[in-house]
Image (tube, rainbow over all chains, first blue to last red; front, side):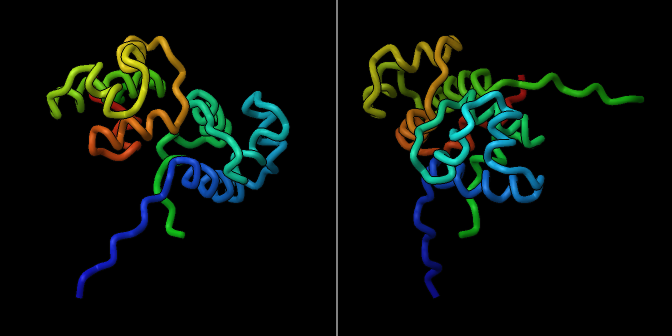
Length: 79
Length: 79
C-alpha cells in the first residue's frame, strides 16, 4: 500500500503550531512570552495566526524565552 | 571527567555554516543559489558572512533551492 506523502508544512505553520504547543507546556500567555522575549505584546499572537514572516533572531529569542532550541519551534508538527 | 558544554551556536552562525556545507555538496555558487531561490545576487554571500538577520521564509526558499529542509540549515554544526 503506497504511503501517502504528508503535505509540506511551511515554516510559518510549524512556528505557529509549535509556539502554541510549547507555550501550553510551559503554561504562559502570548503576552507573557512576548514580554519574556523582549518583543511587542501582540507579536506572538500574530505569529500564531500566521500573520508574520519572522526573522530567525526573533524566533531565537522566543525559543530562549521558552527554554527550547530554535529547531524545536521549526520542527514539523503532527497535525 | 566533566564534559565541557559546547558554546551556544547562534541561528546566524548555523545558517552561515550550513549554507556553505550544503552549497558545497550540491556544487553551486552563492550567486547561482540566490538566483535559484529568487533572492538578490549578494544575499547568500551576506548570510555566509553573518551580515543579515534573515526571515524564515527566505531561509525556506534557500532550503527548497538546495533540496533540503529548513531544519537542515538551522541544525547545529560540528565546528
